Amino acid sequence: MAPAPNRYHQDIARNLEFILLRYLASNPIGVLYHAPFDVYLTETDVFQPDIVIIFNENRHILTDAGAEGPPDFLVEILSAKTRTLDLENKKRTYARLGVNELWIIDPEPCELSRFAFELDRENPIQRFAAKEKVTTPLLPGLVVELEEVFRQ
Image (cartoon, rainbow, N blue to C red; front, side, top):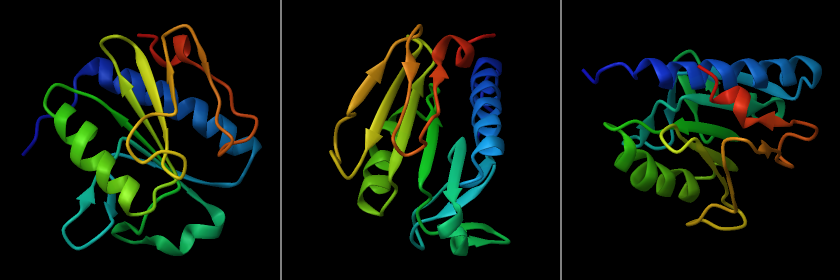
């Protein structure tokens, strides 16, 4: 069994989840789930992203077991044990199998990389530092202040 993420990882996940849940309460365009939540992309590609948003029009992928198909929006928070898996295998698989957008959060330098796979399947289209604000056309009107996300 893999060890649980460290406390700072949990702080970041909770802070961002709270922001996204507030957004979805005002803009009911989809549903949010958080780890542990299984995402079945293929029979062998099964992941548990830190945060998942599935838009209302794609709720058909939801099952009792999790999601069977690509979510619209994913967040992966890096940790020492999962860094390579998140940055290489998972990112490549998400891009190949239809995830719209992925945010990879790196707690150590307090950075967020935004991937929009329809624009670039390999590289982030934006990078944000700790004191910046993140927006995405995928979630219109959402403004994420990273200072709030990285608050301990």
